[in-house]
Image 1 (spheres, helix red, strand yellow):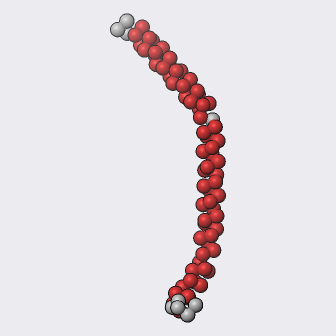
Image 2 (cartoon, one colour; image 1 turned 135 degrees about the vertical axis):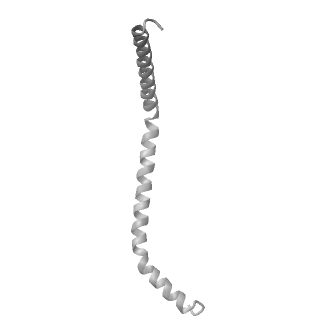
Image 3 (cartoon, rainbow, N blue to C red; image 1 turned 120 degrees about the vertical axis):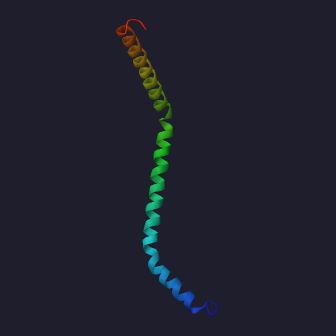
Length: 79
């Protein structure tokens, strides 16, 4: 490699020494991405169940709100 300057060759050797933590970091990042994709897939598979539960909770909250309004109206004398 006579056409590559000596300072660049030295730098590439030094960067190879420093690269090992990056590789483990890269491995960890790839593993984290894999876990995130798996969690997303599992979440998407349960989307219908989550939507049904959310609808039941909304309905319950609405019923509780309606019951509270009736109680308040009865306490205040029908206002």
